[in-house]
Length: 409
Image (tube, rainbow, N blue to C red; front, side):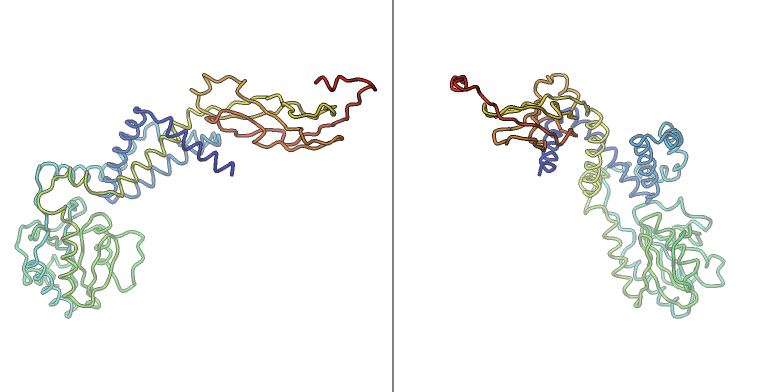
């Protein structure tokens, strides 16, 4: 019960100690963390987040447990953190700013639909032609994120989408049949493009390079990829790094339609600030929670001071007919923790320890000292105390015959 009380008092103390400056401090860090989450979300660079958490975690643990060698090795990473971050993740940073600037350049963004229903129908007709003939194909429907950074080779174009054109592109006699077709804004923008292959992804033995390429581009962007297997004619759809088989090609109409709805930013006209302010609630709540946690660990806890006091024990309630002959301890050593500001106005006379002897019997007694026997201000925390037991000897007071002094008390 006392542990719950301490936690409750600590929570009250934390809230009571928050100032306007602390609120601004937490707000600024929350915004920075939120933009970092958006950066990771848009670039899908989850490895960055894992790396940052790992390095900071190792340094924090090394400081807490005084791991000298570990601190010497990892603290330089924090010293040159920004420089190392920019060098290692320059491609992801460039990709993020390209996404952000392309959205910010227009104060009003019309609802973005990558491809229309008519274009989708052309894709489905092409797939219906290619799949029964075991003609391999890879069609990428671009989402909101730029994917040009990932494309290698191929031919840039602005051709209208038609089933006949797609069938001809993937014809085995066409030199670009091994590459991917990229469709964005109802146009074929690339033909024969080579995509990054998925790494360390366990896929079926019947799936080859096209499937790995489809997974690769969807791991690094929000694009959707449609694959026709050259060996079996099976149709698969890749999205967010996962692959699923489609039995009926006509289901692609609904799948692509859902993809368009998900990638459209809001409805009607929206700016990038509408996207950042009114969406991504999970990222916002996570950013505020992480900022509060960091403030508690790095700022609030850093101001916590731990001090030790030897408090004389006050033996109370002793009957005049008995006396305290001896005690194994007459002081309790206590360890008190609290904020530095509270200790500045603190008087150690505010600490006391007592034991109630009103019901004690004569002879040698072993008494247990609990936290209830120690008085201290509520804004402090009792971290430790000792001893927790002491021995006392109680003897009966014998008054000389005719001595009425006890009656005068």
